[in-house]
Length: 239
Image (cartoon, rainbow, N blue to C red; front, side):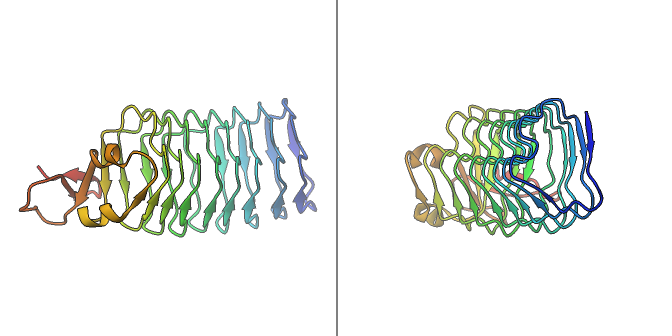
């Protein structure tokens, strides 16, 4: 089933299409500026959504358990992605989060089983609790220098994640942030060993420290684990 909304529509209300499990596609007119909480929760057959320009917020649980949702287009000007917004969107392989986004809620992308890469926009300061937990195909995460805190279990059970860059701006890391990340071997930290010592880590900091490499723009003369960016902007270890 396809739903084409009228051109005068400006708002999709709370739970408007809740559990419409035969809805495959929806055309939202350009005038829509608001999507209510749980607007498309449980639309298990929905495959594609283009969110119109003018929408600034994806509210809590908007696309919760839209398990076949493979394509999402988010507008420039979006500032907020709520809690559980894309929880259980199993078919979502990639998502372009606009640079305007400054807040991503807890549990927002939990169990997006096919999601492979996430670029968190500059301006986001906190990666909340369980935000990307159980994204089992996730191999690449870009964390901007604006982030100061990573919440507990934010990347837990991301079993394909082998390495990650944590910027020097991060001052606190919650418990279990990489628990059950069975492939994770390397944490590229953007600061010095002294700066890492000052980072507050809940739980087992020793386990994380054993995976940490410290940033050095030039070849280090001291012994230890160091890294830098190569000419393509990828992190590489100094050998």
